[in-house]
Length: 416
Image (cartoon, rainbow, N blue to C red; front, side, top):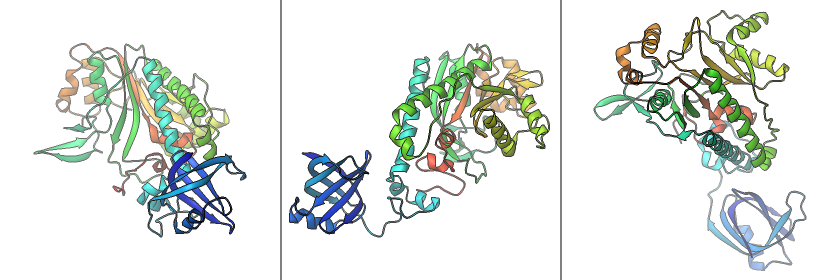
C-alpha cells in the first residue's frame, strides 16, 4: 500500500475516469480513478474536493499511461485533511499568471508552485556545498551580533532601532566582527550572514535585508589568497548543485555552467581604459556604475567569461582595505555584468588603520572598540562578503532578486 500526502493541484473529470494531480515537496503525482476499478464512494468523493485541499491518498502504484507521469496511483482510500477556501488569491498551478507583488503578498501559496520550490531547493544545495567546501578548507562557522551601537563601518545607511533606553542599529555586515575573530586567533572563519542596509533603492537587484557568505582568513600574503578561496568555492559549489539539482534545473530551464578556475583577472585601470574606449564616460577613481558594469559584462561574455575579478582599485574604495600607493588591495567579483562580491586584504597595523579612518573623513574616537583589536597582535588577513540572492539570481537567470529569498524586504515591503 502506497501513501501520499499533499495538496490538490488539479482535478480532471473525463466522465468514466477522473484524475487528481496531487502536489507535495517531492513534486506532482497522478491519482487515477477509473470508474470500473474504484469504489463508487471514492469516485463520487472527488467531486467534493477543491484545489489546494489537503488530502491523503492510500492505494497501489502502477505504470502510468500518461506521458507526464511514469507512475500513477489507483486509490483505495482518500481522506480530506483540511479544506481550502475559494477563490484562491493566486493559482499555484501557474496557469493563471500573477504579478510579483500579488505573489509576494501570498508567498505561502506562491512557494507551492513547483518552479518556485525549485529555486529554494537549489538555494539549499548551494549553501550545503558552500559549507562543505569551507569546512574542508578548515574554516569555522560563527555567528555574530546583528545589533551595533554605532555606525561602525562609517556608513549612514543603517536602520536605527530602540534598544531599551539607548539607540542602536542593525548591522550592515559582520565585517568588523570577522576581523575581531582574526585578532582572536580563529584564523579562518565564515558566517551565513544577514545584511541590513537602509539604502533608498527600488531596483530588481537590491534588497534591504539580504544574506551572504562571509569569510575571513589570517596569515595571507595578499588578496590573491582570498580570491583563490572564492573562485574555488564557486567552482565546487556549482559543481555540487549541478549534480544534486538535475530535476530542479530542468524545471527552471537552466543549463548550469561550472566555470573553470582560475577566473579571469582584470585591474581597475584596465577596466577604466576598456570602458573609455567604448565611449562610456568614466574618470579614474570613479565607481564603475551599473551601466559600466553592464558594458564590461558584455565584453567579458564576448571573451567567454561569466565570472571575472576586478582588482587594484583606487585606495578610496573602503577604509579598512590595505593601501598600496594610490591603490588598495581590494577586489570585486562580477558575473555577467552584476557585482556579486567585494573583498580584499584588510589593514592589520594600528597606525595604518587609524590613518585610513582619518583619510575617509571619519573620527577615530568612534572606532575605539574596533581599533583596540589592532593593538595586541593582528596578523595579515582578508576576506569577502558574497551575496547569496544575487548569486542565485544570476545562476538561475532570474529577473528579480526578490525571487531568491523567501520573504523579501525592500523599500516598500515589510510584510508578510
